[in-house]
Image 1 (cartoon, helix red, strand yellow):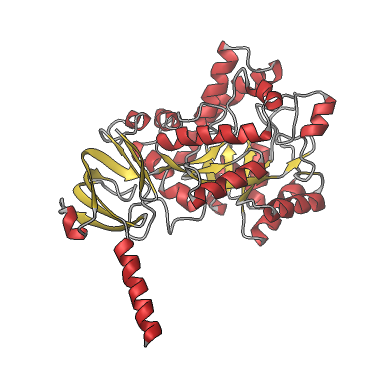
Image 2 (cartoon, rainbow, N blue to C red; image 1 turned 180 degrees about the vertical axis):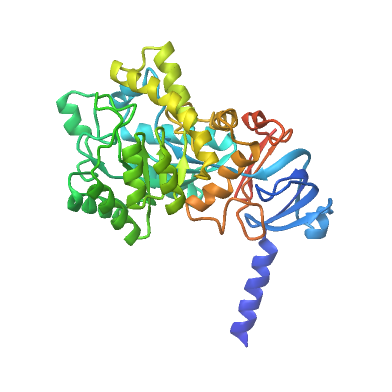
Length: 427
């Protein structure tokens, strides 16, 4: 009986310590894809949504110590998610210089700044698709433990073929040898199985590969398929066997289709997807992460600066236009779209510009919001905790002064950000 009494007292103490916040939302899009509702009350308890109630309910009715936030003049929705970012840098005149001048520790500190800009822009979860993995796993864990502020991070481990897009390039031979991560570079199916298992052992939430060449590889190897079908299949099988998804950077149709046939979970960019690609997307259920902002950014850099090398410029001008043309075809074909910017190519904190480009390319504002919430949560396997504002899910909440369903550019200026029940930005 004494033990039971102690347990009961502990439970009562925990309940008394519960932090409750009550939000009055003028317009609430609790579930993107469904119609928003007017005059709603959100009840947040211990970082999660406890209830969504019609009308404006008195905060005191949910507890004497309940905090109150007045968003009656705002459009309220789930925090957005960016499925393709690179938090450890930004493309520009200093990028390659900083790779030499800044230590790994410096770059790790810099990524905290970029992550804060991303969170302030309304992106409460990101999928990190290409940074120093040891640094990023530590950053991910620090955010999860509450040691530093930042968006929730889903961190990728990398598997690259020698000389492929994810491998190191554009340096003299001594630096190439110094900067190459030999554990993540593989050649042949068996070696790629090893590299995949190694990445998972050391903390990868997912595996990122490049089945084709890339624009920013400073080497004139084009954007066609580079990994062999067997190498891609080996990565996918090894990752799936250990409960990890696979994202494949892919521009050319042959590389897109090879990756889809192998069973990857998402295609990043998908610039030259063809009719076969769209059929494979539908058959496998894989997502397309378009990254239109990256395409626009590299075109602007090629046309207006000397940041890119001649090899990069040639690829940038071709791929940038292809990206924009193909997303409308993908949407029409019924391909699942998840929001992703490739920020780090573009500036961090400007992630919402992707939404504007997606609408310009033919998507509706609601489709864009779904891609950044419900679809993104599904892609990372977290639909049970993220993507909507329903009871039991994380209280990741943003607000704008007017509805982005009427003007998608409202997302460019987010007024309010809450992550896990904690307010991190409020105008």
